[in-house]
Image 1 (spheres, rainbow, N blue to C red):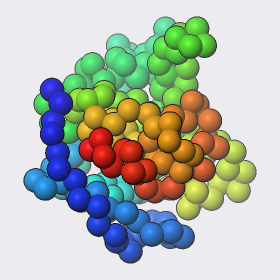
Image 2 (tube, rainbow, N blue to C red; image 1 turned 180 degrees about the horizontal axis):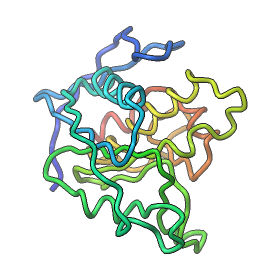
Image 3 (tube, rainbow, N blue to C red; image 1 turned 180 degrees about the vertical axis):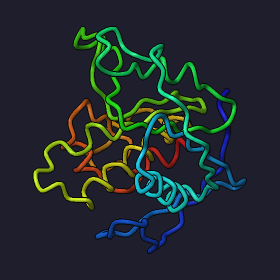
Image 4 (cartoon, rainbow, N blue to C red; image 1 turned 120 degrees about the vertical axis):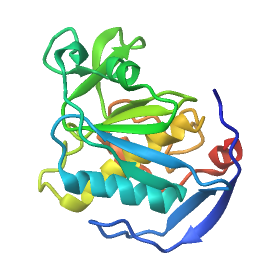
Length: 205
């Protein structure tokens, strides 16, 4: 069920924990504070969870609760059994609460445009809805120096993007800066995005 939320755009110079910001952070705050629950799936680095928690608080002004880790089970495996099916994860953990599932395992979904059954993705979220999943597995690609700052920025952007879908935002076609651009499996697209929502996406919220 689509929730109607009133958002105010506030300028903030807050920084996300664990990585330095080189640009201002724009905060989109709900009139009624929402709570997002973080659901670790399998073994997840606590520092990665911290990045997500702080980015959600800074960007959307929401409360965040971290749940106890859930076990990765074989029923969530994709057909190849080498990675996990994102849609199965969403279906199993679908909740009436705002829930972001985080895993370090590779996740995939069906790509009808490319006629591929298992298309590796950074994340997937219901739109509108309350549940999304994010994977850290592909976020160090094309990061030869394994920069922690770059990895954390990517993780924050993907997490904010998927929560944006839960809040009703589609993929953005207004420009390359907006956080809601469709990455189409390309990490370069994520890197080119800024930590902002374009004016069109702001209006839709």
